[in-house]
Image (cartoon, rainbow, N blue to C red):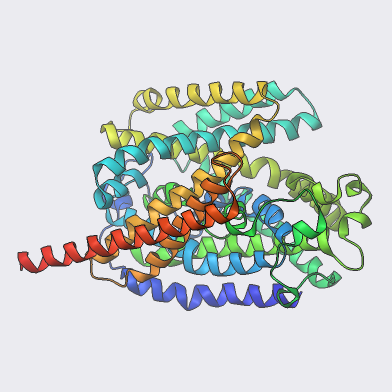
Length: 490
């Protein structure tokens, strides 16, 4: 519990100190924001600051900082370090600068920003990549809530239909009609659940592994079938709560609703730090569940004894919330594993609609034009969902590819921001180091993953390191040419 308390303080300090430093790097000012300059009453609309924060938090969170932290906690206390350092120096910096860059570019979506700073080829590739990722998010977050609601009553297909109808309505309507009204309530529920669990942690003070007990892979000791390596698997497993490329697709939604650049830090950087706190709490709760001494938590809770170390993340949420928080906990758990993913799904489709409309230059004020873009998105999602239902392991396959694609998107976002900072002669080191690290993580995972090349650890680490060096050399060459070109122009 000492490691948890220190990590919690580190996250809070990170917001006030490093967050302020990153803010000074960007230098927000009093220029007119897109919410005012391009107000259309649909997507560009000024919202209250507190509401923007709550929507941004729920958009980027969903169940990510819960499920990812639960699965990541199986690696042991190393999860604490990744959540703290990843959130402060990578994730929150990534979210703030991508959100502010969108703000400076008329509320532009991520592919447009990538095209502006990395070139049109990268823009076209990332347009397809980003839209496909967003459709995967929407599809994944239809099936899992539908299965949970099916256990309560009704058929899975009925709930899938209801959720899709909601998606269509939420994607079509102005952002302040549904999202602006109900999202703050769901965000509050997630925060209240996290706070209540944190209180229970301090009440129970369980004997759980500390950082100084070792940063090795505890999962391999707990279960002989556990084969995932800490590097790179931990850094893919815990995405939301540390760094997530999906966030860069969501920040432009709120960049279109902000009245002043000066509230960017509490909105973008602050929401990510808050998500880090939620992930930290769930990682600690999961450490109790899997590794508490003298016996793991799952042995103390009747509902978890059969599955033990292999208890799924949604099941851990339900078991812990019901056991620790009673009836209220059960309701909050339901909101967490049902409402949160649904709200991430609908904003994913909304982001995809806006990204495509921006690329093909179709104004979104008329609902018919919104439907023209949205119907094909929903059609692709339905086809993907049908395959997922027919394939027994469909959900796991889509989730695994989503995890890698999500972090790969963060790589492109970090490189985009790094090029922007370098062009503006700002301290680009703040994103260069995270960009190189995440580049290494994603390429190594691609080499070592059983779903990709499935190479040995030695070959994968060597290949990942070579890609890191090559990328660093590429950036150094580009930077030298950029500065020479600037000198010649002067």
